[in-house]
Image 1 (cartoon, helix red, strand yellow):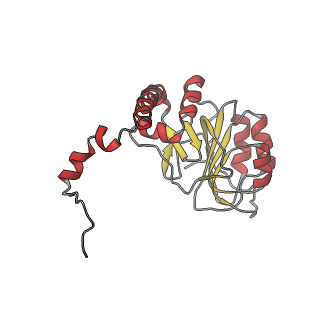
Image 2 (cartoon, rainbow, N blue to C red; image 1 turned 90 degrees about the vertical axis):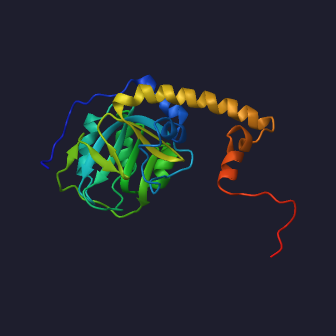
Length: 230
């Protein structure tokens, strides 16, 4: 692929992005049919990390953060950087200085299928990051890559402008065109879960209102009134 930088991308409605972020990863993942989840090895660098934004995608050479620097001038308020590499890497490709630049341009967080460094500084800045590794191993700035092209990050396909929601449960991708519908489905799911929560508070068993007793019978489970003798 010829190294390419796409300057202009479409983004989802900002309010829709905020709504999806408020729902969180687990609800969004369920609302869109359990799709779009990145691999669980992408973990937040601090447990309260939470972000939702429109993806600025970056394809870099392993151990080279030149294209992350190049991506900064394309970022705007509410964007989230999604960085992957052409081959596996755990090098610390992003640190405190890049975070300062990202914050200045309105970037709300970073998803990187590689390593980060300066974690104490990033945590103090409250700059949310989900990464595969934490490593002080430095990088170079020598190799061209691409920005705002379709990539695979953490096992999930993502295009520039798609919505990314990330929290302590992981990272999920919502296609830009589907974002409003997923938000609607998310609202329905939240309302349904609140009704379920209230039933559980009253002492009802999920075993009953989910119809799971019939499932146990179907699976051949039997109840006895005393311990079975071995």
